[in-house]
Image 1 (cartoon, one colour):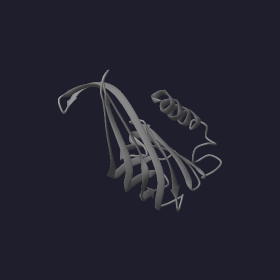
Image 2 (image 1 turned 45 degrees about the horizontal axis):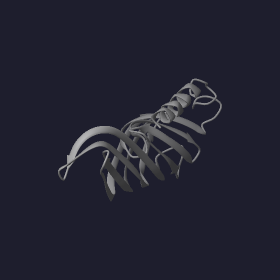
Image 3 (image 1 turned 60 degrees about the vertical axis):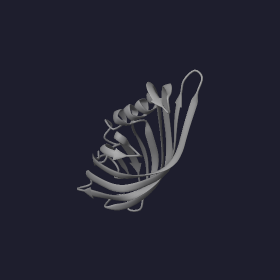
Image 4 (image 1 turned 120 degrees about the vertical axis):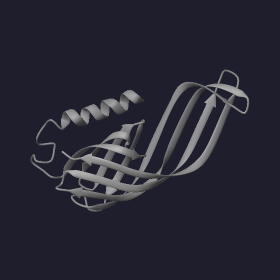
Length: 160
């Protein structure tokens, strides 16, 4: 799954090397925006590819989403759907039971506001709400916790 997200991110960055694809080329309909911050849409470090009102997000921790911008070429409210998931081998004891693997999935909705200066610089603030499922396993036991999470969102980015 990690390879899929990295391949998609790399493909968007390589595509951005073509002037007609990026802003400043033939059209202002497309924006490619590397982002850093905290977001369920783009993770901690991510990439957004926007065409008109719609945007596709990918990032690390493996996460992604689809957003709709109400005003695509300026300051704008946005809303969207996101999903993320990861797992790794990890020794952890819960309630006296030793587990050897941890995994987590999350999906939900989010919204916020994007400030866009000079059609390049982004600041986004928002909030997300979603369903979380965490799982701990070993060879003979499994534990699953489910819940609802509300998370703040804050990212900075530069569009091309």
